[in-house]
Amino acid sequence: MTQVASPVSLTAVDAPGQPTPSPELEQLYRGFERELLVPLWTEISGLMPVHPQSKAAPHLWRWQNLLELADRAGHLVPVGRGGERRAIALANPALGGRPYATPTLWAAIQYLMPGEDAPEHRHTQHAFRFVVEGDGVWTVVDRDPVPMTRGDFLPQGGWIWHAHHNAAQHPMAWIDGLDIPFQYATETQFFEFGRDAISDAERISPERSRAQRLWGHPGLRPVSVPGPQPSSPLLNYRWVDTDAALTDQLELEDEGFPGTVEPGHAAVRYTNPTTGGDVLPTIRTEMHRVRRGTETAPRREAGSSVFQVFDGTGTVTVGETSWRVERGDMFVVPSWEPLSIRSEASASDSDSGALDLFRFSDTPILAALGLDRVSVDAGR
Ligand code: 1HN
Image 1 (cartoon, rainbow, N blue to C red):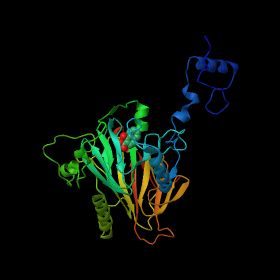
Image 2: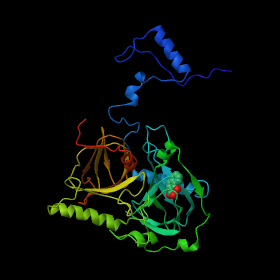
Image 3: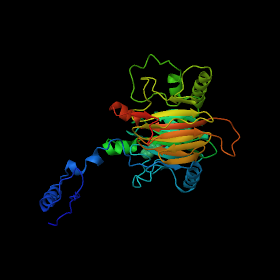
């Protein structure tokens, strides 16, 4: 039998906290390698850092570049059974070329040409869609046609049937977020194909989804549906409501009443109306609005996030990296890297509007395990 090289490789080093190198120590380490054993004393700082040391890198993707490539894919790559979606994932440059924006989160731009259908399927991965611009696509969730227009947020709980249909005369792009890397690491994925085509009734575009009619009334739930549900039964959160909530927070601040996260920084979290908690079991989603001229305090959080600029311009700083950002740009904030956001007009920008940012993170996973930590204004 040929000897397979051991994946364990140990070297005796003369360093504080390490045993003095000797031929006997080398012999001991060869024995560990043969038996596939790794002693804690050579590994402790990597296994137990004093705070999270993310493998992911801060990184920014420009929306104009994503859109241009997605449009080219729209002309070259058909959508259908097998490939399922024309979704193009952000690959964090420090995660080995895997389609992972962060160690737990997948983020992608998805593109559908006029008249196209993306076939029905379901999977255990929890997902959402967020629309930074455009309209015309109807996603069909458990046979309920749900409209998508700019600023709408659509959660998609695991194991629920869904398909998409572009009813418009123009292509449409949106972003997808899923917990694919998390479910890959925990090896919990299941997937099933649905019907090959949606029915004609599901191609009809109502103003409001059935889910919105049942669940979309603030503070009110249908009495007929008992108990908490793991994912939100409200399938679309409309921009008109999100915008009003943020506008009201900032107006209340002007009137001297509390409600903002910090001065000039309003934020709302999308919640599951059956629990009041996060919309999805593994993904937290929020919309932030930073007034012109405001810079947010540097903030670190355990766990990773992905942001998309919804409106406005400004400068975002993640750790040692800063970027000028504008509509649609997407960026990654790795675990425990400090983030601060400055809202400012660009040279070509005459509007006085705020900087709006959509955010998603893996916080519900951490919160369920008591691992969610935040540090505000902690210097390096
Ligand atoms: C999926 O079903 C969608 O339904 C988007 O839009 C992205 C990535 C991997 C697997 C399934 C969608 C996906 C996906």
